[in-house]
Amino acid sequence: MHIGGRKYLLSGIVRCGSCGALMQGNANTKWGTFSYACKLPTAGGGCGRVSITGPRLNEMITGLVSGYLADVEVQRTATRNRARTRASESR
Ligand SMILES: [Zn+2]
Image 1: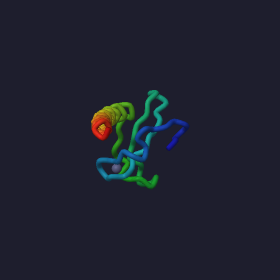
Image 2 (image 1 turned 45 degrees about the vertical axis):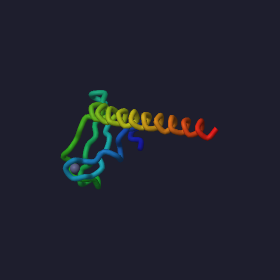
Image 3 (image 1 turned 180 degrees about the vertical axis):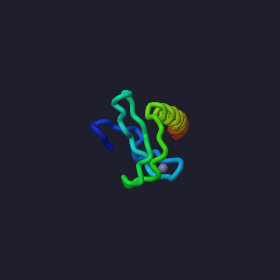
Image 4 (image 1 turned 90 degrees about the horizontal axis):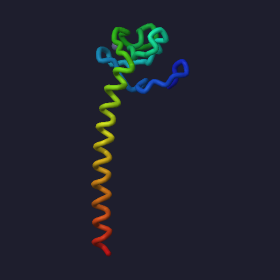
């Protein structure tokens, strides 16, 4: 999803903790940053009362995702090792 030519990592993923509507990335050119906000009811969104600054949220989520990917990598390595063991046994 592109808004103003910028891609927001979590647009269409992060939901408002208050009403559950999808939150939207908004550029804040004044501060050189961006935020995720619950859309106003008039914009077809939710309550419009919740927002979080993007860099902070991205950092948080990126941390979670890196942790998850590290887990996946560990599992993959374990699977590879098992496969290698089986291959050598069948020989
Ligand atoms: Zn909301």
